[in-house]
Image (cartoon, rainbow, N blue to C red; front, side, top):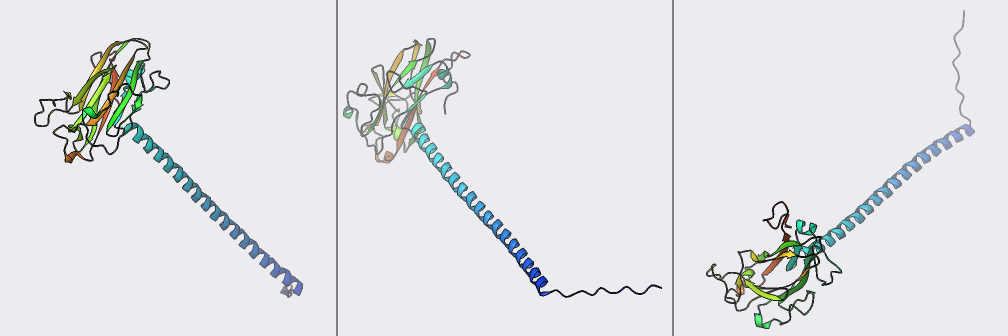
Length: 273
């Protein structure tokens, strides 16, 4: 007969064992605390880096947006824009402020004139078509000289249409537009306000409420150049030059287009809008 198994008597810890046990617990707690602290610091640093990168990216985007807006204002909202439509560009029509065409392209923009007041034709300089190239505005008028060239491989027919793209406070009712083409001058104004079938006494009537004029060059030879000067001002002798148009403005565009091969009777395919 077997006897009962003796219960193991647990021996109390010696002071040395107790010290080692307590040291291990303290060490484990310190290690855990250190890792937690290190992780939290890394997370804070990571969040700070993300925030800094987000701020830098936002600033860069804001600068790019500002540059884009400035570019749009300069190229799209001048008092006068000159542009060439897509088919004309493909056929080699180019425009430039330089008669030597050292720089050329498909779009130009005249400088704006601010705080314009009305004047009259006799106040304008007599050498507007010969004084200089590009923008040469006066205090109260827009003056812009540029050149159109056939830079393609064959003769072409082109048409240029000058139109009002924006007018505020009916300023276009009193506007006058002078167009010089190769030295020949013509003046245009909107129809008389009291009778839309009649022109003002000093100018040729706009073709319609929006279209100022059109001109064309047929058989425009390779290398040929046409010179244009466009002048825009508010005529003080016009009956519609009244206080109500103060603070108004007029913006115009001159569009060059060519005959297309598929539809030779139509101009202005793929017009820039």
